[in-house]
Image 1 (spheres, helix red, strand yellow):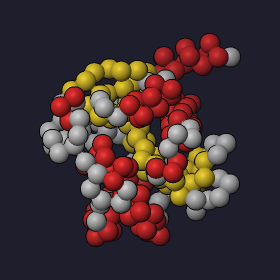
Image 2: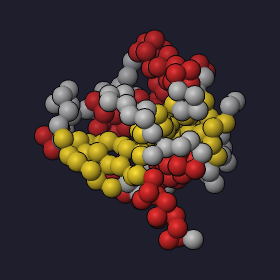
Image 3: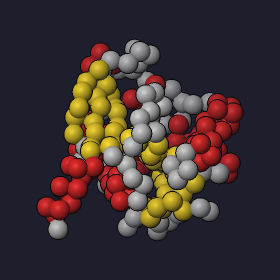
Image 4: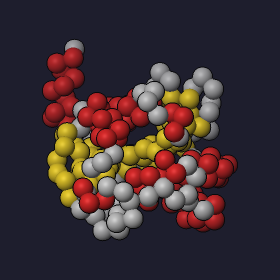
Length: 191
C-alpha cells in the first residue's frame, strides 16, 4: 500500500484494482451521486473499464498527484476518495483542483474538511502549488461549507452543460479558490 498522506483520522493511499467493490458501493448510493448525476449509480462495468483506469492513470500522468482512497485510520474502512490534480479542462501551471466523494456514513464527521485541509497544506508546503481551486453545484451547501472551512473563497458562479438532469442545476456551479499568498497570510496569523 502506497500511503500518500496521513491525518489524525485518515489515511490517503493509492487506489488499486482491489478497490473496484469500494467504488461500486460508493457510487451506488443515490445521495452520494445526487449532485454529480442526479443520483444514478455508476455501473460496475463503467467503474472497471473507465473509472479505475482513469484513477490509476493519474499516478502515471501526474507524479505525486491524482486520486487517493480515503480510509479511516482506526478501522481501515474505506470512506471514499479525494483528488488533487490538474484541472481536466483548462489546466494551468501551479494550479491544482481539489475534490472528494465520501460515503454518506462519513458525512458530518469532519472527514471532508480534514482530508481537504491536509491536501491544501501539502500542496502549498511540498508541491509548489500557487492556487487551489474546487467546484461544486451552487445548491450543494455541505460541500460549499467544507471548502469555506478549508479556506477557499467563492470566485464565481457559472453554468455548465450537461447538468440539466440534476435537481438545482438552474442555480449553476460555483468555483472556489485559494491562492498561496492568502494561505500563507492565514498561517502566519495562526502562529
